[in-house]
Length: 342
Image 1 (cartoon, rainbow, N blue to C red):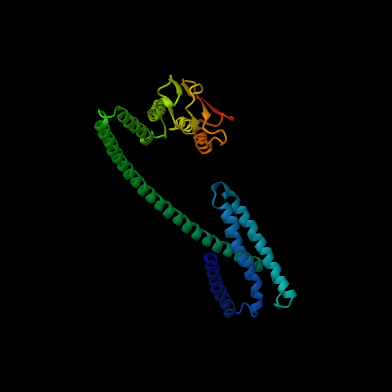
Image 2 (image 1 turned 120 degrees about the vertical axis):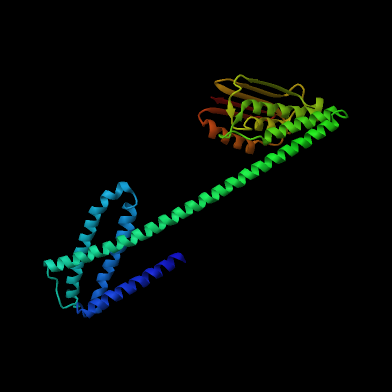
């Protein structure tokens, strides 16, 4: 619809312009046959759009291409001059004009001026729409900036609201913990561990979206605690975590996700084959290994979505050549090994 409207406007403007020029020409006695004007205006209009949308659009918008515009302009005007002279001769051959082409200074200068004239019109047209598009782009940029600022304030308010809600939530947890601590120490400890897990899940990151490795390890410890509290001596988990690089920062939940998968999908009830978690962090690398039995060997181990998302985050932060993730998805056992070079 927009293109159709634009074409219609161009058609009307050209119709008015051509009518004006022909009227002036006929009034001055420069021509008697209206048909002889048609091929000239086809040529002029072709020059107008070719110069604006081919030469200026492609070469005029990039400063490093400006040098080629002058020679192309000269060449284009020369082609227009040659075609104009040829049209004059052709019209004489087909009897649309009584005057044949006469190559003299007046004829050449007149045809040359028409080419320059339409190039100037084309340049004016191109500059007008170029500036309009620039202004539109600036308005859109300003609008996006305003919207971004508005969203920033909304996010800030949402963050502050979330902080208030977190404080309220943890105050409630603290009240419940103190209320049941004497009556049921196990329930009280469960509430305390659950509160710690939620605190880790809701805690923010630094400006780079990272947390300290100590926080990730503590999150894992709380997950193991709540699992042991839930199932008591019915689950068997062996975990060893060594951190020799406490200042290290990593994307959140990249290790927690692996542990959650093991606790959720693994069979933790076999004493002779307990769930095994080993983590060692030093200045050179992060080494993580998890091994567990599967709950149901007839079903595929469900890990694809969580592993895929975690792998993407590791890849994004550390780089694809900085880590190795091996998964052994056997019939009865599931073993995951992750090594990240720091």
